Length: 465
Ligand code: BGC
Image 1 (tube, rainbow, N blue to C red):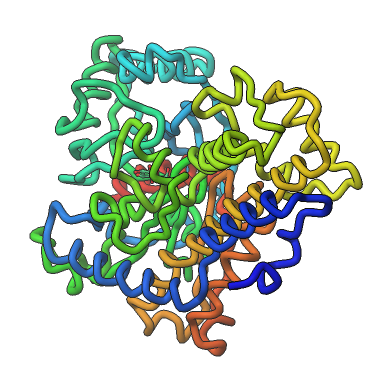
Image 2: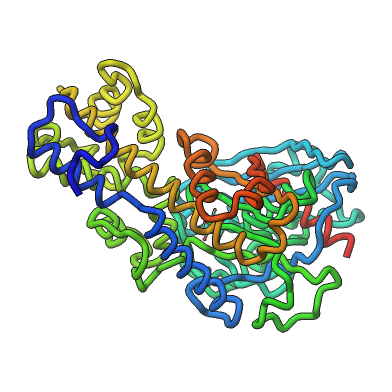
């Protein structure tokens, strides 16, 4: 392919021939044609089927034990604990009976010690603080408070409120938890503090997102997180889940947590790996795992870009071969820098200058350097948005009957909310693979705060049962 046929946005004004050649090479590596995407979607579907048939496969397809839909008319206040990668929130969610919910929450930052050792005791302490600050700690005579627990990591669920951790993903790595029941671990920590709190439901954040979207709009079929990590949950008909040994639900449906971040893990057979992705993977805490997540989600995109920057600098094609202590540090390029760079349209690319010179501490960037930084941000971000459509298309086309009526998809996460053009590129790419008549039945909606609100809704459904 000649450089002329590449997107004109990738032409660097004032670049040397070597610089332009290197940028063109990157552009070709990051380009994902529809034809290539079609092959990836096909493999994604095959892996979904494999995960529905048996446990222990690449895509875990985990039954969540949620078999009902909220009607949107439920009222009352429910509690939830929402554990993300960096923060923990304890919430009181009030459902208004008209599909709306308000929440009051307290947010806690996970200290390093909690991330590597004392996680469950830390969570219990936060719950205690919340109960005391709001004067709602139950005494010996009062019934315990039921709480939903959003746990955004892969868990093999064994009931609505039990399940064993399959592996840590994203930033957490607390030893001694894999293979153990995370509700038991939390319940024990709560008991140690003498708190009358019962963990009534264990909920993946995608399941929470789906349930909170379904409370607002009963036609919701999928919940997706495009954030620090990525994953999705959807309503699957129980008869399609060959491995399901539990009772056939009255509704005929079960919410499945796909754990799609694991797609192409170990095999690395279809995703468009570049040397920069491989370098990231090798140095991550979970090499060869979460392959799809590592190309899409906020935890990783900045690091892919950092690898590219250093690769160019090492050839003296960027920053005159210079680097800095900060730039040499893994994870020093936050994905939010790419979001800012992608939309910097100022004549001298001043936002990017700020990032390179002040934040990353590499002085004297040229306009050519800044243009190249912008192209890197566009390439990494747009590949992520196009690849995100793979999971959406594969899931939607699994239940094509649903596409004949309006269906809503609830989405939450920083990539979806803040990455420039992420939603537009993702949904436009989806439209290339779904017939127009059906595509117009789909709405994508931001399910803000879905994981916390959803956990409270699942706790409510569990209580009703
Ligand atoms: C986890 C999922 C989670 C997703 C989004 C992934 O790393 O494996 O369980 O839903 O991140 O938070």
